[in-house]
Length: 219
Image 1 (cartoon, rainbow, N blue to C red):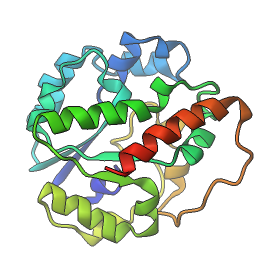
Image 2: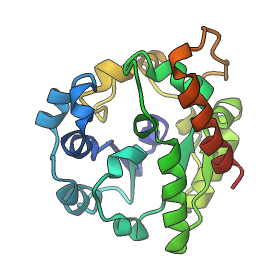
Image 3: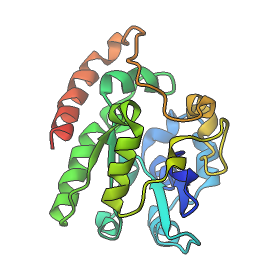
Image 4: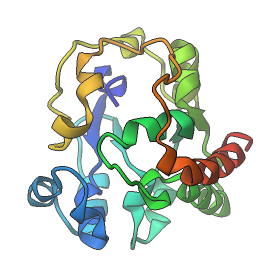
């Protein structure tokens, strides 16, 4: 998201369906800052689709960052009119991070099974979205961003590789809970595997996630 925010031809929207998700599930009971998100955003996902995702913008490119699990209780057919890219992450790394905000995440919270369901839906409507592993972006950001831009049909710009540290106006109100590291960054950091001990109570979830993750990146 921060990378695309560096483009002068692009408007960036951060997780517009977050409040919809919180008000349609019990996630509002344990997500940090849930009350603030619900108060800040439109809660009706269909209105978000009609008024935000298909709203009027001054730029020719609009980048929406979504979480797969935010698509709950929605008609996915709007994605026929969007270019879709699936970003995933090694669950061994991801679970070590999310546990700091959600101590006992479920499969719904992490989205690996939903990634495959989304992929199958997109294929059923004639789309073949590219799957990007975050590790690959960190290893060679220029190569992966060029691949993404080519898939979209827009030019890659060197400006996408760096940004000023700190918060951005596009950040969702939840950034104070989730964006500590990105606010310290000035670009894509070199990939470093997580070294802290893996939380043992998530071992079963890790095994399940690795199965879905392996299927997704092999597509």
